[in-house]
Image 1 (cartoon, rainbow, N blue to C red):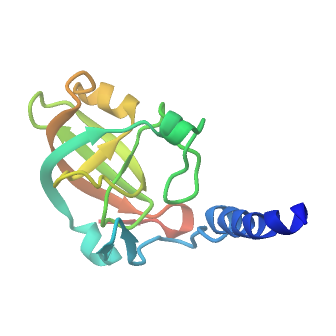
Image 2: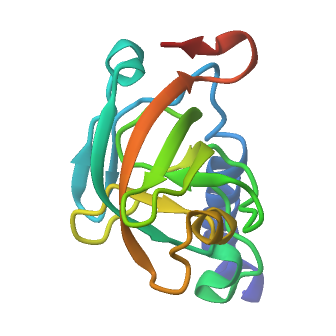
Image 3: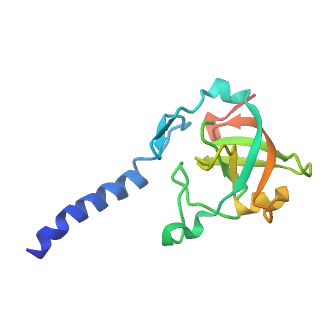
Length: 161
């Protein structure tokens, strides 16, 4: 009797585990449409992304302790690493290498985008704590940045502009 009560829970837990680990792997680039909080996002094509430049608001995020979990995972299924030079964008193909320049102080870094977001307001970019420190805005939380795409993809899939 007790075992039958847990069967639905175990089945849904198994499905969630399988889709979060193996079902989210990518071959080459990840640019399929996706939905977050009821909103549908359509990432740009590789060719569009190679010529992408934009300015807007950036924030930083740290998934190490979100929702009581020890570590989060990125949209590419990689472990979130606060010390990585990485970030998140809603519509660029993943993975993607970009140059980010803090428009308030002129500091610039190269990042590997491997996650989706930010989903707060009209923010352009989320970066890891280390990237925010290098850009000189970790203490403020937000800053204005210019983002320029350098390349799309990793390894044999890499394309440069």
